[in-house]
Image (cartoon, rainbow, N blue to C red; front, side, top):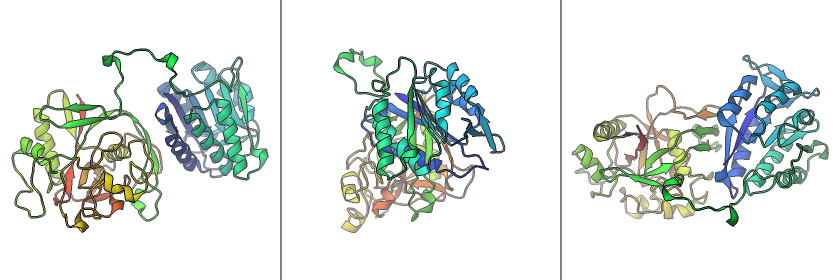
Length: 453
């Protein structure tokens, strides 16, 4: 996997830049590429000089990307603690990259006059992309997103650069805004690739025990609950639909650790095995059976279930997913309304909602796993019953978050996933609902996370 650390800086006294939009476009283009699982983007916003050292030490990137302002003297303008501009000279940047040579394969400077910087350190990295003079937001975004999309399809650095240039021209932008590609000694951009398909000659037998865990690998606990492995990664959380302001702003989230998520909502059988009592019993709007979801479960009830399950567990700890973990797992690497795209007509194949349940004379939750799973092996992430998550309900921040857990306090907890009596939009990956911790309804259940102790 190739790691791209994406530094961005827009000091207070400089002209505003669309840095969030650039990150979104880059990540969206990568997600649509053939080898998207081989590229990881780590955003580091509001970058200060020390953040450069931190990012390079922590993430050991193959690509260092900087978006922001540059000066005519070849400086990069980062931020100080007061968010004011702090110039970083070409000499300082060269010393930084020399300290991490030869691990860095590519430096991408999406800033005005960055070609001057590029000349200063091209001999200590593989390749450098820099802008010759001033450059517009539109040109920066068009070039960067097209460049990384090409990389994600296995293009060489030279081919990706050429596609980025073509994108600028296709947007009808000024040719004077064209970037410059420089290569270090004995480096050929036409043969350098950040990702590429595995060729037959490079395949070697691997013992099953040595195979890396991958998304969808399953683990089953002693009472028969099956969990799918969810790998760490980066995604865009939320949506930019003005109709639903609580989904905005769409923002990058980094989940740094893998976890296991129950492949279905907790079933009536699983609940009964742990708790004994059946809170849904006797309600006419509930179908009973071992594989139906446990419903009429409040958030507080879910916590009691977890406490009892953890008392029985050895080597595992169970909890509700965070809201970010839930959406990341629901998306399963996708960026549309649903894990299967944005066409609501396909929802019938993947979930229960008002159109094929409540409005069709079946106003109740259906057995779990009755529809198709998402690409990571999770059933009913779109529809059937709402699912509690750990977070308090609140607004989203305008910054990149790592392993977020939501607001510290609140009056209601988040519900995700839609339900059998709700419109298709409720089943979308980004849709948010919420309710008080003591509320229990026939449309509410939950699924759980398992982590190693």
